Image (cartoon, rainbow, N blue to C red; front, side):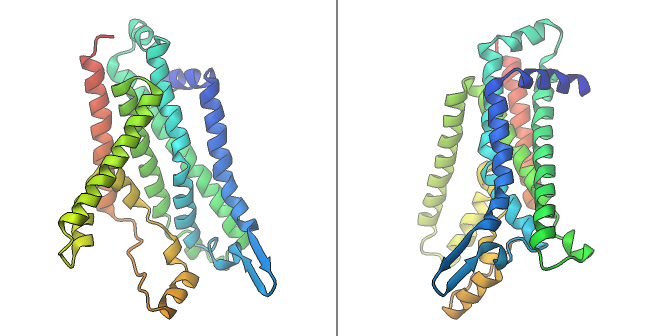
Length: 281
């Protein structure tokens, strides 16, 4: 494992575009802290976003992992471009000539995916811990370290999404087209979801039926791991109750959702290996 990771880190160090994308990604993760500085002071109306409880423990784990997952596209570009460079620079063929098996090659890419996801998760953990220590109204140990399952969900989500990017990079070979393929897949899932809503339009439980089906699709299953946190805020809930709206939702991370994403991750990695096995390099 160490040898395979060393090979990948060596390639990453000498890839300028990847280094820039990684720096941008972690800079964006850090920028979550700037949300605390958002203030509105218009006459009698004074609004400070940090005072709305977004950095309170344990809510911060949900909020920050959701916000951080928005930026995962930058690391996806790193994964896809690294795979595309293997073909364009012929390093894939050279690695195989030097004695690296196709299985080891796929494993080296997957290990890199896991490491990048792990580093991202740890980074979000540290940023969240610092922000919570400064702004949270709660400092009890039991409260601070509750709801940490959102960090696990964030890690699994990144591994699944990057594995999907790795698969598309091997399937299409060129980074721009691979990213385009992912966007096409996203649009296809959205169209299918719209079709299901139309299909069950006369059913009072249409949303539940659509969600039951959509939860098994790859991008939707990854999205389900961390649901939007905004309607969970007490301020939003209070306003909703005043106007007669019910915003109650299950915000929990469920084990079956993690299992679905892990199954898709295995499918993408195994499919990548099969593609590599069948291709004449």
